[in-house]
Image (cartoon, rainbow, N blue to C red; front, side, top):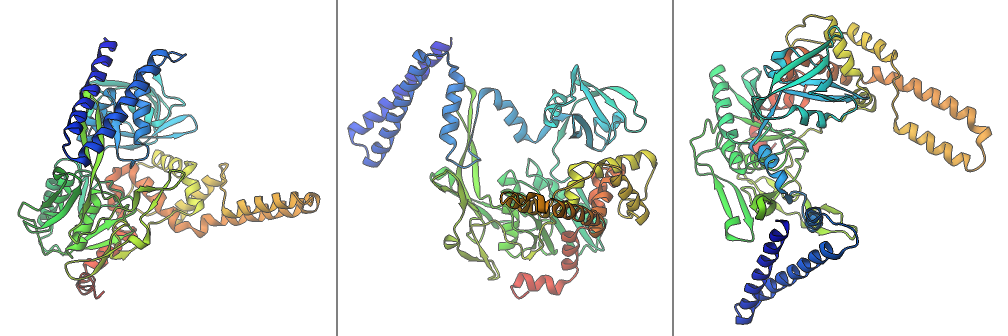
Length: 560
């Protein structure tokens, strides 16, 4: 069977080459013939090489794997969004693109060889079964997950919707071993998982995806906020961490705030079918209400279409940090034998005419690496009100607020799971807490956290540690080992004492993380989002701007 399929495969190639050669001989366009003759010639050379390797190579070959290696090698010099999907990968790809996932509604984290539940979907299958954050996962079906990666265990938990999966856990509350049979459910990936009033007359919409119905969800979220507060003065649209998705849904989302017939994004490719302009087609919710769009370095693709359009059309203020810079459009092309090629077919351009693609995949260094668009190639464009904006580097916010980067001590506490474990112990001992937005980590609770950390083998490296190591190595090479050993030991002891002070010096940051981790135990992720309205600097800045119409209008007019 396989031999017949291979024979038909090569016959198709030879037929294609023959057709091209006929065109060439007939003289139908020099450029056409030259290009396609080279393609036909290359295909013939590759086909013969592939056939000979599989036929006479000294060791047994895997024809499928050999072809996959060749295809992957062909794509390696293109952008990372151009990918080949084999027959066994198609269903997973369709599943992902549809935004539907069949599981039990949990996320896992690995500590040493043990997997813990780190997040639970509110009212999802696991939540209804009684599982809690901090429970240990021991088995999925007959498979022990001890030592397993979180992703591998989640694969075991996934399956056909409606089917049941048996799991075994050790409960955080009493360390008892429990068994469950939990139904898998399709978790339709909600694009708008959270909508709420962030402050006095300011609404908040979190948008995490651009799957089907994203525009409809944003439209409904706006209506919900208007119904909750007839005196609504502004809306925050949070795109931070949103990797993008469907272009048509990005256009639908902008349509909630822009009138029908507004050009939002243009696609430009090499062929007629890859050249298109998308415009809004529906009546909006509100074209006047002040709008703040939040972005960060992980806001990409469709997120940049939305934020770029709002900025170019002076419809809202963009706040945060520079976005990712993905201005490439992909299309899935079906291939033979139920395989597919997801290929970049065009670039997209915002209403001002700029492309925000930041990485230049068309120009590679000798080692194959790529760099950002050269500064000399970056061009200036203007918004509807004449404000300057630039291409070649994502969306530059109107108000720049750098993303909070954790201090070394905070990152070490997170990496070693000490904040997670402390929050788990807290929830084990305490039955309830106040509402999410009013809960605070008191000084006495933070003192208890310090005591908890002191009882553990907590250590973290800093740049100073590395500097001492480098200095020590350089002096040892000069045979000064005996003379400096005591000094280096004393220096390390002093540095360790200073690092312990970091727990107090960076208390505010650490408290913020502890607070979110504890709130999640009682009010799920929704509680964390709600609590962020009181301590997230980007959201607080957005609320301030929306409540100050003079500043808001100055920014949009270019006078701010």
